[in-house]
Image (cartoon, rainbow, N blue to C red):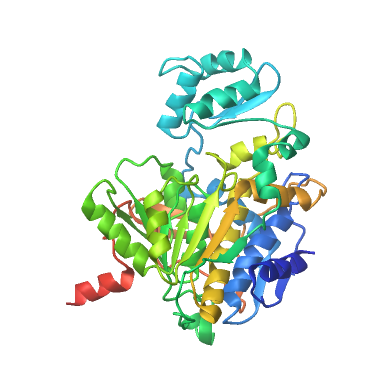
Length: 448
């Protein structure tokens, strides 16, 4: 089943993938959903795409499942981090359940305003405020104030939601050529992956601009970094982040800061977009309009867009999409045993980006890749149900690396090409530590 699904993804994206050997030792997570299939297929698709110009591909179900929980294994000097803010969580409403996402201060403040509470209110105050309103009312009030919330729906209620109808008919990974994108077929800018001389470095020479936050987008770009891509993450001073996740998803990347309010910052971004092979965004539609404009003018660019609810949806995170789509159904809600939607979408986005690069190599032009957490949730539901079991060992899947933050314990990249895992050659950088230039340009500048 898993190998067939991987091949079907390749066909949908317009590329022929090599056969993927799937090794399943019976590892499972405690969920009735087929999380093991989602993990193996998404990791396997990215691995197979990277192996097209190299050698055979393999995915181990156990390694894929461990990777889907990598934030739970990540340590700095042996210490775990805090992934959820105090007010983030599920609350009982007058007629059901609602979840608030308050990891960013401005989202927390928006939720408090929506509930008529003062800044600094505690969880008990939020609980009482939610209990006196319907779940949909809380969701509406919070989202109208640019916060993040989702009422728990039944699967039937979700199917009747306009956002569900929007994503239902779209491919899981949509890969399309941009009309008028121009550009003739050009050689794959790679080294080791093409010759098999260095298995797992299939993306050597590929420039990836990372305009993402939290999990799905950073996992996609981190995966491409593991295959040798030059990944430059662009942020800004004061931009809200979850520090722990920023570090754990930044292996193999470089990081720069740009102030897009300044002409200098906008020029730097234009130069980066114009010279990139891939630009990855994970924001609500229209939130980075300047990038839309730059991407439209770029020739031969692969633009990857990851959203929560598709092109017409609003803000959202994995935990909220689980509630809205009914994946977390129960009383109280039963979330998935990992951020499955985020991780699956991240690996599928890496697959889509590489597939589009392969299409560009053969056909030329510019390409667009679209994914959404809600479409991934629909796919997970379509995979059917299995027997829940808690059988997962991380032994052999963890590595250690020194960094500016301390000694890091992290999950090694899953998937194997020619029997070897991909890997990162550098630890996570401090945010904004690098200049807004590509690695080879920076190297040439140092040599002058």
